[in-house]
Length: 186
Image (cartoon, rainbow, N blue to C red; front, side):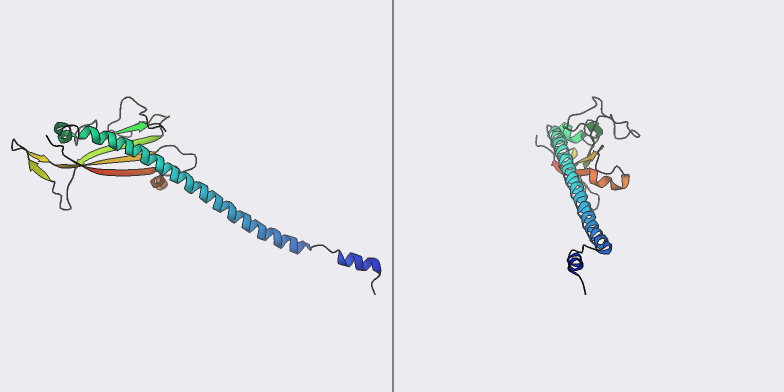
């Protein structure tokens, strides 16, 4: 039937083109899945680092503002209306203030310095319960004073090469911290 040469050729047959194509499709699907997983992992890592950096800036700003407000009763009482507390300003990646003059939170669309990494908004408000009542007490002169205020710090990362700058996805670039402050003793 087959000669010796034909039998050797029959034993040395390679893969058909269909087998090669099926193998390539399977490998392509696996590689694309691994690539997407890698990209997702990198994005989640960057978002996590962004949140940690935002939290660090928020903590530094919060501690500074809290220590100023609780320095004296007069500063605490006026903190809700004081523009040194209630303001928007910009900091670099190390947390240092960029602009010497801060932008009031009531101004319309402040222009941010191009080299700023974070926009920080600080607000001090009187604490109130669910019914809207504040916690007041009369001081030695009989004057009613608010006893608890809420300090809120919102930090937004302004620039990111990896995170989306889409306004709908801004939550990945924002961190809000709030703390209640009690009026200091005399």
